[in-house]
Image: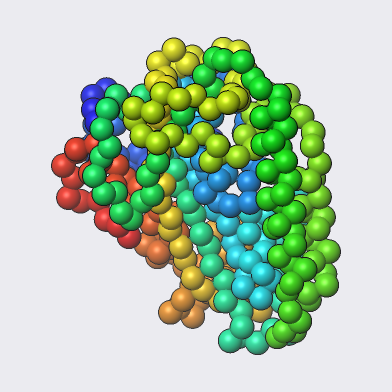
Length: 335
């Protein structure tokens, strides 16, 4: 694959994430751009049940709009005794307008009385890289620790089949129905508030069970797997397309088959009994990383960055991309 004059667009408006990606790409033949550099880049409806699915949605839309390599991430926070909640609802666990403190407080309340030995938690970040013009006719070699796939252009101009669109919506409905059903099997154990947990997840899932058009200016992809291609030479088009708003500046550059890489990074720990520390954000004040006796919010930025789930995922993704694209680079760590 060629890296000549390539741009990576970060599918995020977060300045800290942009700075991190630029630092890791120093010395590489890539120029890093921000989502804010592209007027009209639509919002993506993150309606998937996994971090990987939501990151892929953001990367696909960004790649399709810009015509450039897109990198996107999504993070879940999982409490074992709550069946994995807050999971993909981490940022809105206590409600759409919830603050970081609201979300952390709810997690602590649901786990009140649960002993230390049963307070396992983990952060999991998935990073997805999508190249809409890989310019290759052969498959690259092994890409571990990443997963690789080829993807049909989901926004190619062709007639939309309403029947297939309805089928995709039905798949989404079943996916969320199965997700909700899991929480009906949660056993009463260790003192976690199971009934309140079940009620909360039902409220969170309810909007995903409704079939409604996405808000104006947003793009909805019901099932990212439907666009998987057999390889770079697979010119069969999927039965339907996802419409992009008018004005996408990079559409004419996109090839029929795209290249996708994905990597994960995890941080394991235990749930504290009360918030401690002033650094960080989100659930940091209530998570004690494995092998430590302080919460993430009590660590310095350097200490946290060294074990960051997001940093691990991003470093692994870049290490794999460097190998796939044939760029010599020995200084990128897997974290």
